[in-house]
Image (cartoon, rainbow, N blue to C red; front, side):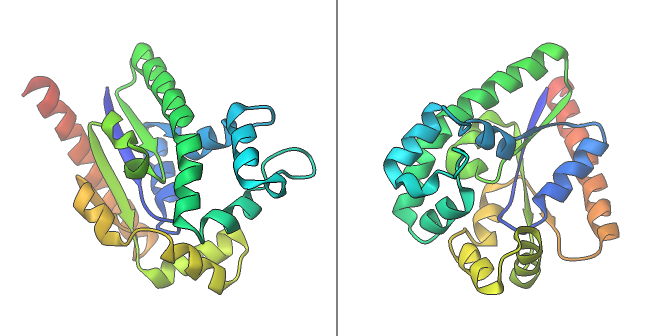
Length: 205
């Protein structure tokens, strides 16, 4: 089984790439889904987050108020690091469990779709890494449309994240999502060919 770490900063188009790979038969572990599950009502993670950041991050229905929490941590690096220290250990445990399940089922390719692949240390679970990058203007447009926020808030989020160079230096493959959908699909097909060759070299080389 080849484990491919897929990441990229907010608005890069990582989710689109992940979906394209899934449509081509790759199994996908969505770390955003895992992150939502570990803060379900009554979970140790949610309780620790509320204890750390206060009752304002608890919604009326008892679930985590993600927008309030995001406003707190995106403007304070130390608070973001504290949040990550609460969530990452449980997320990593759940990722390992899923990888074991895919291994047991005979999966050939598993994509670990993780926004914080490198920050969390989840890249250590991967055979190779792929980062999706884009330019700031496109990212801002995508974030405002996706999250229904204004441009100023989108820019603030971008400033709290790493630049493209961070991903370029740490990745085995780079997808530049700055053109048409046709161009993106072409890059995906090239990536798939490279990944299949990589797996063949590793297994039979």
